[in-house]
Length: 337
Image 1 (cartoon, helix red, strand yellow):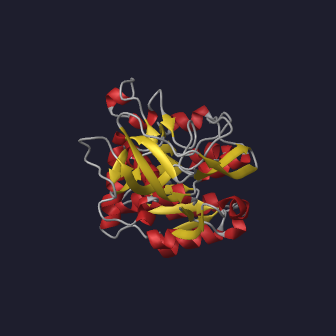
Image 2 (cartoon, rainbow, N blue to C red; image 1 turned 120 degrees about the vertical axis):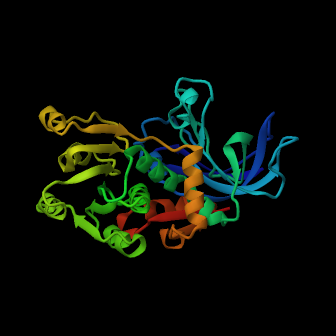
């Protein structure tokens, strides 16, 4: 038997005992060691995740150790690994284009199927990769950083461009970091002073603006009235997503990284006169994970500063409600198994 945390319904999280899974053909058995807490997990706990049915085992930011692997595998017992949690089919219209992140039959761990908030997990071998020397803690942070890296790749950020990231949660932080590494002049807009302070101190983002009556004036002043070549929304807030178009420069690009249950709309004259490039950005690909891994190995990602909170699997049920309070100051929390 093994310990598993299950969200039975919104607000109802329980630690239970389940049988240890047995790997099938082409699968590895993973001993989960670290689980990163994601905004998606908080949405599941709140009942605001649009692609989910209860009960559900959360957790998709995962690292661990191989217990067993198929014969002939490049993985072996004892290998430390990370997981790409977007289980794609490999044959649909998106997968055939290499866009496995938006596979039509995608099964995201912890969302469409049970995830890694548990001691052992079986997975198809092709979604499990060696950590290549980074720590288990860092490996559990690859996934959310890869989402930011993917968004930046979608936005085509180039050196010298003015880039705005709206929303300084973990995904916004990841987008800001990789936009800066691409040479963008990055500004972050958020309503929380603690998050903006983190961006300045940990990410070397020199321009931050607090949401308020004068924020648009401040953003205009930072760009000589031209606004931003690329704008990323990572707020998960309808009004913010709709308003973000106002900050896009003429000829610029607007990338929606966050997802909401509602419809979003724009004033067509504002959209049209800019000839705006409007892009969605979903999940990440294996290439994005490799990019983040390389950046970590080069010392370009301040993972030690990002990991602000940690707990054990047994204690997670009691601490999650506390961590969801903004006053807790969570950037990235890690669960140890």
